[in-house]
Length: 169
Image (cartoon, rainbow, N blue to C red):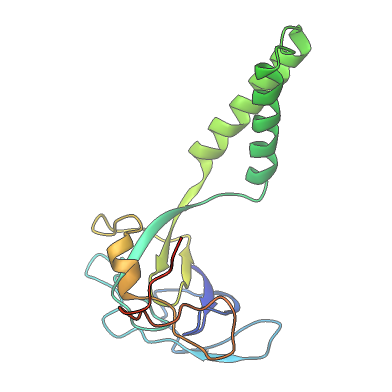
């Protein structure tokens, strides 16, 4: 199993490879020299599926697709093909063949991309492991329960919601 570790403030720590059969409690993150403790107590169910995060202990995990890096390039090509088609320039056979190839690449990426588990609280992601059926997709209600912590002076964190202060749009 490959794990992309994050800390409690959702900052990336690093990537590790772990054997879930051996269940190491302490691992060294490559490149950083940082040591991380993993909590395996009740993390796996009877079928050896991950049921909670071994980094922070959160029980709310969601499944999502892990797209390869080439996906962004294919999406840009698809939008370019749509623009060419909308302008009426997609009448020659080479352009139609190119658009068909982009479509085939897009469908192949959707079919080949693998599932991964992500923790709602710390956003640690787990790759190359069997995923149980009880893990659902991302849910807004669950995500709001695990909002990022407020760090004073740091941009991008969500502040406390005050009922008497409303934003005027």
